[in-house]
Image (tube, rainbow, N blue to C red; front, top):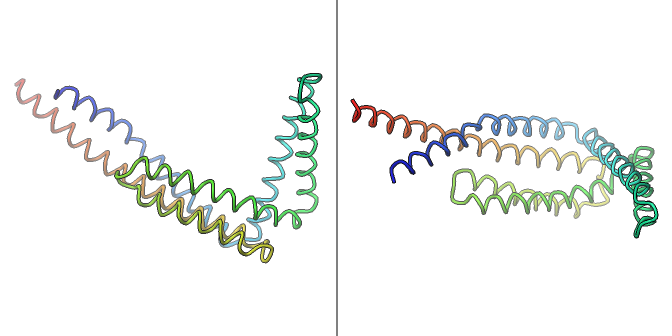
Length: 205
């Protein structure tokens, strides 16, 4: 039984040893969020261009698949979908201001989806350390999504950038909190394993 417990502690220590990467991701999210919060219009336009690139890329992939599956059932629908995706991306590049309202709506639903994911993760790791930060972050994501839809179509130029930045700051803080919790857990497990190994060596001696 003691050997199994020792093995479990060693495995947990190895799993929590990657806390540094989690902390680094949290710091990066907070930094990017602050930049987006300070320059919301630039961030909003950047989000628009990023979504336009995503539409064009997905449309090109869909077009290749449509040609590969030419003559099969649903080929016309795949071809039409690919063309529409490319056209939407080109229009967003050509008229970014007109696409900001669509970006704001898309951002709102992204915040809803992200909030649901973080809420699920918080419930899965509860009552481990760090779950409260993720739960609070999920509630913030839901709230920001509601605010985005409520304010439309006014201030569509700045709201996506501000909310995107605020969401990154809150989410980054939650990830940072989780990383620090993993660090504390790793140190505790490290001490336990070292104490166990020391007692075992003393018994052998």
